[in-house]
Image (cartoon, rainbow over the protein chains, first blue to last red):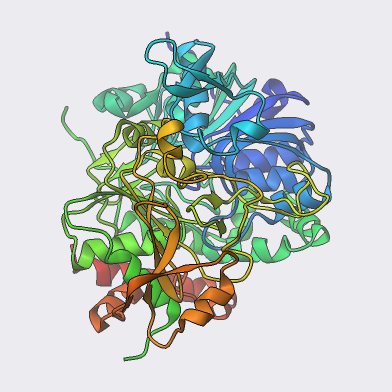
Length: 306
Length: 283
């Protein structure tokens, strides 16, 4: 059963993602697959529909680059340090192109992924009643539940064509271990038709077996495994590195205009051939410090004997 | 002592969190208010963040509901739909959320300011969306809302109801089948509002020192009622302010944006390293 799914990000994106695909992204702030968004931009995968709960850079970058046709989401922004400048520009002004929006709540998106993961067509949620969310979203069906007659809102299963999830570690088969918050990744992995796992480290299956509770995604959901240290930069990965806030601020500053964002993409996304060159451009000292800030305080405990 | 309005809001908000409560934290000021409460008067409160962290003892400000710090020394690290499911199930005592626009029944808009002649698909101002706020507003037992009192924020009619308060008045939450208690308190930079138990209408209950009733009324679009026992908010204590700055040394919530914008990576690293060392002493 030891199928080796290890590949490069460029090959995974080329082979598994098509224009017009519906795409889901894992993580929320922590573990967002930012390097995957870079690669989607580099390969100019167009007319994508995104299904996301609450996302920052990974979604903002795709919108700013004009790759997105529609966003089905609960929240798109650059929380706390800024606003979703690309999201706003696209929705309000149609720059670089208009995107269609479809609003949900975080629980509703979570239930869409859960329905997809369970192979059921929909699930009910108790929230959203009394709000305008169902009014502007035809996919949400408000009805009285057939058992007790309570008001419920049905949301359809999400079955993305492809999903990207960045995790701490995985083996070559794709058994993926996550440390810290899980967001909706356990269900996104199962709901997606194709799944690309990027990870900080590829580890032997024998190490996976020492702490199987950490394996949140079994290999049979996975189509490709890519070892991609710092694949969430400038966002963080629990136990590996913390947010690169000065980098995020510079990016936000550049994003104030479409021209500024385009120039930023030219410099930070299109100017290199391999992701390693992006990391070199950041500098090893900077990366070491981001790692130290996290690791001095918080890391996956070592399990020596199991 | 001297304090900023931001410090005042954090303090006023944190004091409304009670010890032993299960507290669900939203983005913005709630992120800091939750940690402050847990370090000062509510050491047994359990802070819950929607990406799946339950009971963290953070050594710095979580910068989001999903930041690594939300599972630092946590009791549980689980899934988003799971913790929001716990809200729906009724386990959460209090939710602390922000808002962009609010009406007199405590309904919130964080989706879009649509504007005249514009549409939901092409609004004047697009906002982030609900995130988990609607789920919390629907199902948490108590809801605290934190937002600045500014013109066009406390409006007669919302363009879009993202998160329900009392909807259009008494009985509406029950009709909609919402299980939570609805908004309890609105904390602003000038005052605190509460809701009339009978009419469900927001009224002015407490003023910050130096703020007048007229000043508050001028910023509110509807005919604001004033509570019969108008109180003054107690200012933050030195201890509260000290801890706030230890938790948020970069001023992410506390302000001072210009300082941050020119910050080099080296300064950032140094400040954060010191933050961890200082906070480690409090665990």
